Image (cartoon, rainbow, N blue to C red):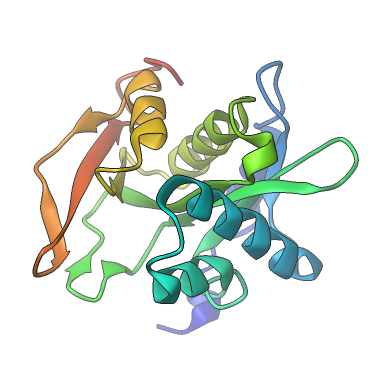
Length: 191
């Protein structure tokens, strides 16, 4: 399947564009090509603030927004002055990782990162809410994610918005992560 066939299309992008400004947070919309670098810097800085700089290869992947826009939807949170505050990647088709295809009805949230100066102001929540709205508008029934155990602030956010913890998993021997799932048909818990 070509990259063009995997794009979510105007209906889904329009839902992401319009459904996401509320009293709790900034405007959230699909990233524009001229914002790829700034979005990557903000997202990488958010990861560094939470887990440090030990895994430089993964941090480079997080910063490479342009490298994933052909197969995913990247949403950005934008301040009133136009600065990118953070981003989230939403997988609607394809593989979650090299070993696992998305299941029917599943969307997958990845690489949620908020610039350190914007953390604690509802930006992460706005990005998660927009990702859920995007997944719903694409006809998905659940939103999944994986996160590191040490990302305590992110895990608190996922709990608050209604994600349920799943079984722990490993992306490589000795490198575990926690899985979460949000039922998009159950109605809002925190979303």
